Length: 83
Image (cartoon, rainbow, N blue to C red; front, top):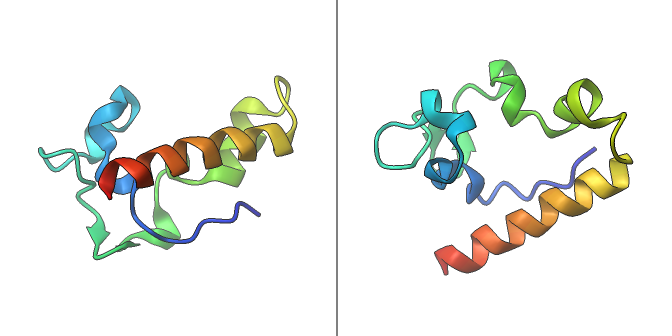
């Protein structure tokens, strides 16, 4: 399972990816972000589900470990940007 620390950095930077346009409330922040947590966590879109996204779209092109490593790298970059 992806080691998310629930910082909310990814949900505050949706403007960086066209994939998340529908979730953007207009300022780059997810319309469902409540503090640092997702208000629709149980029914969040597939794009927001790291493990399920891997299984559906990436398992044939990279290992799960690589996928996690890439996501954690972006996560770290987003956190540095917000500090």
